[in-house]
Image 1 (cartoon, rainbow over the protein chains, first blue to last red):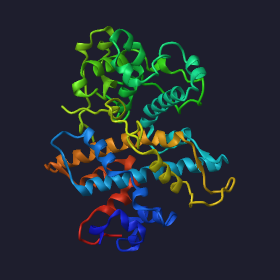
Image 2: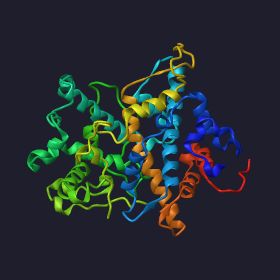
Image 3: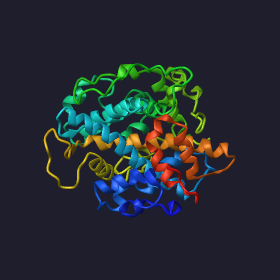
Image 4: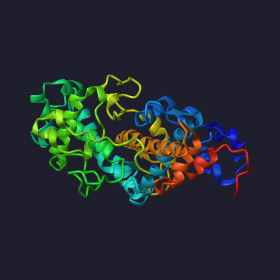
Length: 262
Length: 124
């Protein structure tokens, strides 16, 4: 029966067979028996797309592996949310915030994610603020070195290098940090490696760009600019800052080997 | 060499109406969060109790990226298991191996074991 186990088992058949093994799915089903299958899982196509990004081109993925990872994603969200929820409960708050989620991640061992996610969130806020026309005060408060990049990140990417370097570099820093954050600590810590705690409060006080600044962000930026065919190396975090000096063609791409660690 | 494209969705014209610039649909994430936060669809919020929570709009945004990181990491580790077995196709056993070899993924043990489709009986 286990062989036939499918997400849909959570809709009622989960009780059958192999003991606690299906607890997770069963518990999810118990919480809301009427959950439709498609509401319980991330769309498989999206999951596969993300998987493919980190696998070599020749890699094949069986359907069962795809489905398993799809299940794991939902479990991951539940796991983190549960912890965040408990915190809110303790503090008698009704709303689970992004900050609660980040806190829960760091509590549960995903502290490597916290920094890239904080940056991502920060950028999302800027982007949202801009597109809704309410971000004026925010961007003004955050210093002058990136205040005009908002209008269209895509456009920013394509701008001339002279302008683009300052305009978009933090996109690429995120870029770098994003994937740098996934891997275990690199042999030599990236320049921005510091004790980054939880993300800062929503407004104003966020000013850590200097901390992320400089070389590796630039390297990543130039890498992205000059090697579009290779897709913007996600692992700029460990590479040297040679690109920052304006010699993009010498940027040392040190990509993370897709399966270079265990 | 293949490389990750963390922002491909945002930069490569892949911004879809359904997911926006995010690689995963926020509404779906939110639903899963709601369930995990003790919401039994429509139940009354109980202050200080374990009742339903509201979810800040930013929380699913964080998760959309977090899930990307998570999928990427799990996939890499599973692929390492695939290669260990001298195979070229990743199977769920590889995902299970990745989970079992990684403390961080302990919370997934039940999921991957439940999914493991051996015909022999599962031990308690």
